[in-house]
Length: 114
Length: 112
Image (cartoon, rainbow over all chains, first blue to last red; front, side, top):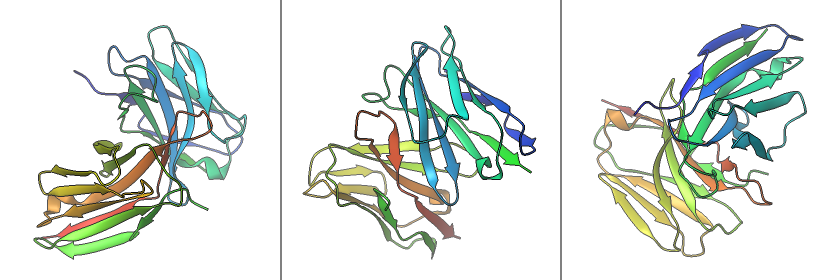
């Protein structure tokens, strides 16, 4: 069974630009969660999508948004990029809602903002 | 203030030695998870502990959940280079959010 895949794996952008990251969950999984990982703050929860609806959101500004498609694939978008947005962005999928089910993480997208 | 405090932040030891890393909090949790993350990869779940005082073993790794369910430890016996990685503890977020709250992790290096 294929794991969680994320594209692209690496991305370089400049301040002010926007970026879209993609996540394909494990087949059959309906929940996708997104996390930001930085050396200073560690891993922080961004949001969770389940059946195309955002269930929960972490403490991030509105520049961070996401969506989920009917096939459970998810995208997250960051607008007006700032230097501090440089991070590893991880997505995790689970069979049902993340609260009661094990989450499986993808390898992440390394975003560098110059 | 971090919800989960992990210590030590960095640890470098020789192959064959034993080690313990800690995850502490002032809050009580219904469950706690340990993950290992290797360079270029996402975290991989090692174990979930749910009962105060619970001890779980995974080969050379022993996980313990504190009696009061506020802290946990991970003990590795006879560490091997393959144990190298970032060890993270995590709990379910409160306040209705379902995301995981992670500690900042312990960077472990096992030298041959």
